Every structure is written in structure tokens, then in C-alpha cells.
Length: 416
Image (tube, one colour):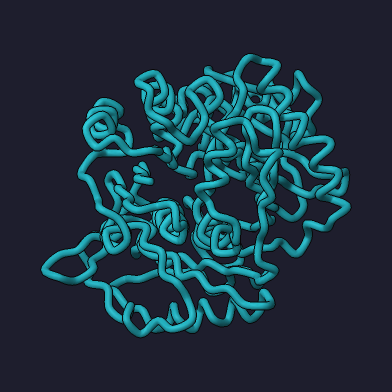
């Protein structure tokens, strides 16, 4: 098979790396890819959001499968365009990807179908939103309605912080059109867990649990990022909790999307909080999470191509998916200043010294024969081991071998 993967981050490197293990895959393209992906696939200089460009390339190259990995092209309808042209594609169509593309849609879906989540209200007028915040009090959560690269959420511990977040989003245009509408949510407490699932429109099979670390600095301090690291499995996601989630959240969500005439096919990500009153949905993503994918796919034992095919054909119930019992830890190395302003082009050293981890490239390029930084999150150093503490130790041992100017990483991934 020939496969085209859309995207150019750490998640896409993990997908490419996993697909390469399949004896059925003979060639992989990645658009646009990055410096590390180029070591495992043929990179094509097409932006992930360039639907016309991807469509033209696919018609010429004739891949047997196109894997659309990032949120933006899914929300724009890339899978629709490919399928309508007779090209086999993995990922949800535009109407189903709305479950991530609009937080207000997701919240209304959960309210309609009784799926447990935080109480909320939706606003497009900042004055009305501020009145609501003053009436509810803090702490409270403010979310940009649309896609904001994982940075559109403010967990406000004071009313002033929440009001500033509303003004930035609605009046200041901090997130462009994605922040013209905001969702203001009740503040919940408890451990957070990420559960990704393969979904074929009807059937659902979950992957091992994971936990992401969104804040930029140790002890969960600083601004939200796209994710500074992840580990799998979660320490809190017991079998009893999994059963509750399956009955009250996972299966009802898939059924709700089907009832709405938006059957979901692809990877559905459940961001959960295990509150004292039970599991609650914090967010949905319509694709593999990043950096959870790096940790979770490191544990996959089944051929990923077989799973993708079963999802597309609506036969997920006919395939058994097996996972390693090992734990995994992914530590993200980021550019200094991320998630705000940062410099690119810093030479990366020490990659050849890594011994016990696999280094997924997120924001890298090749210049004059050397890897250089080319994004906010640069690398995802990922290790597996029989126990989580051992996986964490291995990952950090290799992180310390890698050097680039102003490199930044958290030192507490998986430890809290």
C-alpha cells in the first residue's frame, strides 16, 4: 500500500513511524512533514490545510489511503473532498469534526443527550459574558469556541482573570474567528485523563488511557500549551471507571452523533475529568491527541493499517486490537518562550546519543545537513518500560542528552 499522511507535527511523526511497521505499507508520503518525518517518509511541500493542493497531489500520486491527522483540515472538510473524489481517507467528515471545531456544538450535544459535563453558557457579547462571570464567581473556565491550537482555554482563578480572557477573545481577537464566541464553564476538580478511541460510525474501541500536561511549566503553572508531555496509562483510570465512562460517555457520544446525522468515523478523543461526582467530559477532539499519540501508539501491537481499514469499512467490531502492557512517557522539548514568541533555526545536538527512547520530531527542519528548531514544540522524547517510573526515567535520561539554544521542558511529566 501507498499512504499519504497529512500534517507535520509530533503526532504525524508517531503515525508515520507506526505505519512503517506494517508489512502492508510500501511507501509513505507526508504533507508537509518535518525534518524527522523526512527520515521515514517522503515529505511533500503542501500545507496541511491546502485541500486543493492535497487533492491534486492525491489524484496524481494515487495513494491507497490518505490519513488526515490535524484538526484544521478535518474541520475544513478535507476528508469530504477526498472521499467525494473517490480517494480512500481516514478521519471524520466536516459535519462530524464539528464536535471539536465548535465547543458550543459539543456542549449542546452533551446537554441534549445527557452526557455528563460541566454546566456552561455561551456568549458572543462580552458585556453579557462579564455579567455572567460576576454572577457565577471564580474559579471559572473560559474557552474560545473554535480551534485555537490548544491555547484557547483559560482556567481563571479570579473574576478579573476570567473577564480579561473574555475581552481578549471577543473584543481583542486573540484567537481570530475562533474566539468570537466563548463558552464559559463551571470549574471542576479532579484528575484529568485522556482516552482516545477508534470509531467506525457505530462501534467504538478505546485505546489505553493517557494523561497530558497542558501548562508550560512545572507544577502545572504558566499558560496553556498544545501539550508539554504525556504518559500512559493513567494512574487513576481503573477498570470500574472505564466501565462507567463506556456506559455514560463513550457509547452515548457515538450514538448521539449518529442520531444527529453526523456519524463519526476516525479517532475520537475524550478529555475527561474524574470529579468526586463521577467522570465528566472536559473536551472532545476529532483526531489523535498530541502528545498523547506519541505515548499511546508506542504501545500498539496490532497493525495500524488494519485498524484504519476497519474504521473506514465500518467493521471495527470484527478486529481485535492488542496493546503492550508496558507504560510510556513522552517529554516535549520546546523552544524558549513557547507558547508565546520564540525563535527558530536553533541547531539541535545530541540526537545520536539517545539510547532508550524514540525521538518524535514536532517542529524541526534540516539546514546544512543538521536538524534545527522550526516550531514551538520541537521534539517528543518517548520511552517505554515495564513500569511508569522506569519509562519516565528513561525518557528524561535521553532528554538530558539533547541540546539546543533556549531549550525548555518540564521536569515533572508523569510524576505528579
